[in-house]
Image: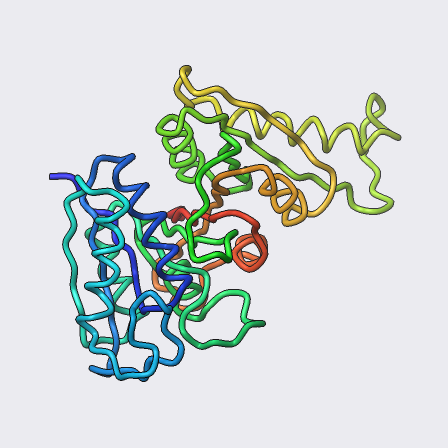
Length: 288
């Protein structure tokens, strides 16, 4: 049986956009959708809830929130099998646990804190850092609607640990019949010299060639039916990926998972794109 796609909801507008995106993604994958709301409190004041719930001035039951999310998904994808759960647990830990039996987790970029300058909510950040399955953080729209794919491009960052991320990105590109756009950033340390008579004086060229070779190795197992494009960029990886994401429907990055490590398992580049990407970001675990 296919594992479901799990989407976390909390009644906020970002979480409802995540429901839209997750419903479309589940239909694309042909897997069930599971809508999950988790909280240690049975009721919440509704002031930070999305207007679509219809109860902005009243206390709202957890069941109301998860039911509203499921109804929204059904309105978007009528034939989609949908289940729902309201869990009396800490949201971040509940979603990470749900991810153990999910094909992927989908969350909004912010929750119901109502703090406009919070770029990424703490729950979304924790889930992206600790889940066993890919986590998609839905970013890039502020009109209470998930953005319909328009660019036909899936961008993947090619770093030192990226095999799982490349596989995931290739699968997403194939489903969407989109271009797989692989980006590898490179930098030449200042005043570096290379001790070889044939390449002395040309360190920039050497680093660029190494980046191109890394791209070729990373993409060698991509199915031949997936159209690919490679790009090496001199400069910081975060800048290269954020620039590429402006014309992408999905940005895919890898995140190393180290056994026995309980800290925030996200690199600086992944952390940066989660906060600033103009499109949804998929964080794919890379086991070390």
